[in-house]
Length: 109
Image (cartoon, rainbow, N blue to C red; front, side, top):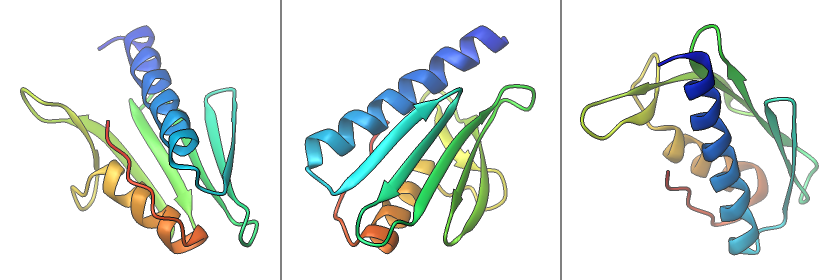
């Protein structure tokens, strides 16, 4: 995958995250700026930050629970998986939102 393809895939993922938050009615604000999506939990002001890392073809997530790196893995269905544990980004993002905002929101991409 070249850098343009990677950037398009990450743009699509970030758009899905934004749409999921909007559709859920969760009290989480988001700002997408320069390849970084910042989720702000209104309950306590804590943030979850997702950023693209094109040189490494990774998405990084920073949350209260720590910092994590994800790569697109699997055939035929590719999913973003933690580079250390193999856990899915969708699950870890869902868990981080629950932990930091007490909102029930489930991500699927």
